[in-house]
Length: 308
Length: 253
Image 1 (cartoon, rainbow over the protein chains, first blue to last red):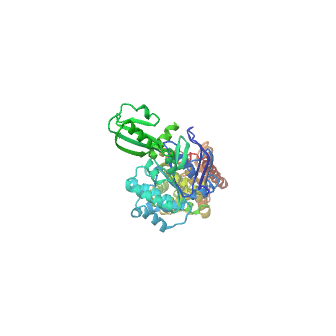
Image 2: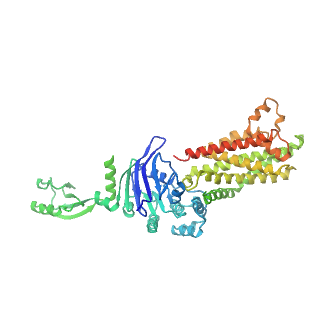
Image 3: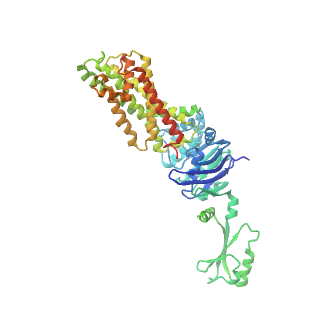
């Protein structure tokens, strides 16, 4: 299927000389949730801002559902809803007015029933006549999301949506994201909470220093880069690893009380049974064992570290 | 053309007017009334007629211009400056509206407000002095054209300004003196040379003179020159705005 957003050789150099994006190529699939991970200053917001028309690219092309973002900006932008990172909201307007403003701005006729539904879904209906400046930070975040949805976008960008957001809103938000996805909306989110990406996303893109390091299905990424570890708590501490065990990738920790075996989940043959047999032969007893899989966070940290 | 978008911006800006009614309409009307009381009724009664017009009536077009220029500039500049300042401009930049549509929305609302204000001042003036309007259609023509042109100028200032001081500086330091020295309170015939010639370089002279002509049929400078001057300034503003949007100056990185 044709990608809903197609980014080709995208470059951005700011007037200050900062090269924020360097030959970015990325296809975003229709209907997926794509999480963009990257450290601060990696270029996530620049990338989103270019697609949405807020920042002018220095080179390359972006097409949104077949519309070029520069030559056919109307077609492209009408498809997109953006929830920015900053809490930039109008000050004196009421929630209701700002919603209708957003919808009109995106070229859609008034639809009070729809606005009401969005406000109700985001628990904002009671606040509809309140001036935005009187709302709490979490409520303002909800207003930004509601505004982005007011024109029924096919693509939703969420730039750090859960930064400084309480548990309840975060839960509401993810529920809404799942519903939107079920209705066919493509969602691109950036986040610092990697466990969120791990939980929500279909695919993960890692961006660092203005370059896309990798884009993979989440499961593939976890498999490919995830490592499993088997930890054995020993009966008696070891001073050194016996030479017979040198062929295994083993580490001693916890003052010789813990033996850690790292293995590759991709391999057919993990070598666990041989290792255990060998330990038995050497008379090394253990009282406990457990295995663990590396989290996306560890994968991410390793990826970014390898790059730099 | 994204008409819904233009309408949204226009209504958003007009809503701001109604919300700040005291500041946006009442205060300029009050200050203009004070001018009428002081210069029209109190001092004016001791002054002779100028070109056969009583002094109180003579200053009406000039005072109206003074408010019109100030309010057009401050409305339009604040209208676009504030979203830049608060960050809400992101929404307008990411919306499917063209630069022309943005200008129509913002400048249209600012000009509407100024025209409304001008008409209200005209009504208020009626309470203090008797006046007549010889060419009412030309009066409306000058009113509308000046409101639109100076709202465009204000829009440019709002785009250019990156702090509140810059927002104030042009209206205070440039427009205000030019208006006071542009014949709002006197006919430029009353100036000695070389000031009579120097004053011809002040564009506001042409505005006030043309506007006064539409009221009383007498002008300091040729009426064609007045009309030409407004269109020239409007053209200059439009070109500047076109350049700003083309280059993204102070709007986009």
